[in-house]
Length: 182
Image (cartoon, rainbow, N blue to C red):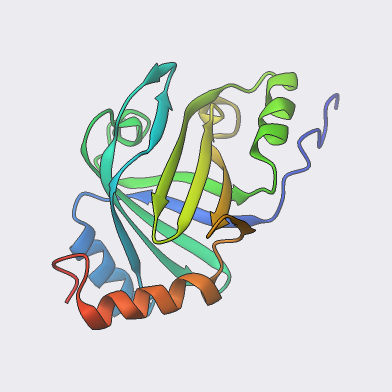
């Protein structure tokens, strides 16, 4: 098969799920499946290019772990909603599979060479983390959107690993931020 393994995908690190009610989803994952603690981030993108147009997206993201795989719960409260646009008429559900990369630009260059476009690309900055991401236009090709994620913590290359995010989540739970977490 021509082009087989051209992108040399790294290990799967994240499953992205769009939810209507963040608190109910977190409670369900914690109570039913024992997944938690959850690090919750609220805010807007520092930069976002959605299907070729620069936009601002406001939302909430919660990150928890099952083993070494991060579950990312996503809820958009204002702005373009690529998530709902790509869920095939459903109001919530599986949105993407995420792969952490060291060099986002290099990976996107390989995607261009392979004829794979980018649906949305953006930057989020919260809690000392800078997260650059790109959702690839792979829904028709492989049945799900694939995401590349490049993270820096305090300016240094980092992975969104449980040892980094779980302590932050526990601090949030203890002190009740963002509002509504207690």
